[in-house]
Length: 299
Image (cartoon, rainbow, N blue to C red):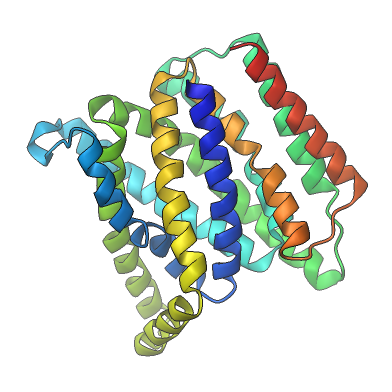
């Protein structure tokens, strides 16, 4: 069951990444951090009626302490990711993001005491190798492109380290609540906190706040449908992911499978965004498919 849920999350993540890429071109990176959850809140509220809702006083103090750390780490992670895809091709950034597989397994062992099986490690290694081949095979059109992709690499590495921590913390919180309640609280609290951080950052940089929000408003209006798709795919992706992590033998396996979302993302990059893909990148895709098969055949 957890494998099927992971595949659903993979497909939703792929659609979400493509929509985010479309929207990120017209919306400032920091705004995309909170917008992806803000546009999902109506659907998240609807899903609350499908399962037990945990009120704040029904959750332990440890839950809220972990949630505070989670929100802070995720806010920085999301900023790094959206900044990366705004300056570099998504077919380059998406494969690099799969490097968090390594950190995720280490985090699962240290935080959750989940020991991966040899088969799980081999399957994840194939996915990781395929993603690395795909990213390293990316061709650049000019020197500016090379510099932009180097900057994107730094942002992605920071995002990977942060993800390896909070992706395991969330399993602890899920065990104290459930996917629907947890998704609601994280989204509801992340949005205002990130908006506050954005405002403080803009004031520090002495930028015109009115102009900033005006540009965000214009960006939202011009990217209404991509953002709508982000909201739908984000909600389903998160709920499927959370449930899979709760029942999977090792939560890192769920992340490994989702990492293969680079396959449909790469295809979208080719057919929708007209990005160039080399034959080596296709070899990388083949490795990722092999990794998925290995994990699927040894559940």
